[in-house]
Image 1 (cartoon, rainbow over the protein chains, first blue to last red):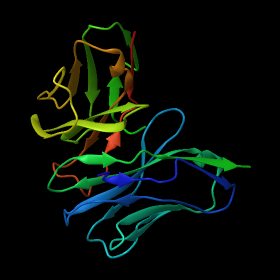
Image 2 (image 1 turned 180 degrees about the vertical axis):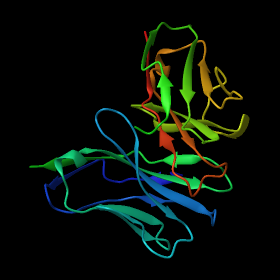
Image 3 (image 1 turned 30 degrees about the vertical axis):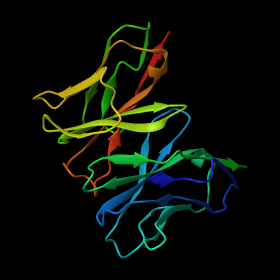
Length: 114
Length: 115
């Protein structure tokens, strides 16, 4: 079974609007971390935001927030006030404590329109 | 700049050959991870080293091997290369061993093309 599912291969958003990128995960490990990374066309992987499985509050980092719904096993990334520079591929990833390795989703390509 | 360096940036070689990719982690990071990103397989975790010891293994082929040296730099060796090994290979580093709480910092990647 897919451990990380990103159901939106591509998304479009108008500049200055908010956008939500979906991520669902599957694990039986009670201790895990969820991460979002951005990969622009230049290829580098940029860490955006982290949420721990025991965290009570949703993580926020500037314009990025993570909508963590543990019971539904979802960890959606919300980007507020989209900018043209946000156009990139976005990956959701999970690291399980017991397994000790990371699993990445297939990614969502976000295009911000002027 | 993440502080993780990888060399070379690009590598073009032929099938059957062997190559070595090099990675220097961020100062102070003890864990090094290797990933392969290809169009058909996405981003796949290959292997992790922590302070010189293998910590976790992912989808790493037997033709591939890695090690982490006392100065914490790491090398990924790919042998008997096939066309399907063409990919972007990332190295990442982090401070700790378990790392469910710590982000990994990715290097710029090495683009391997096998002809």
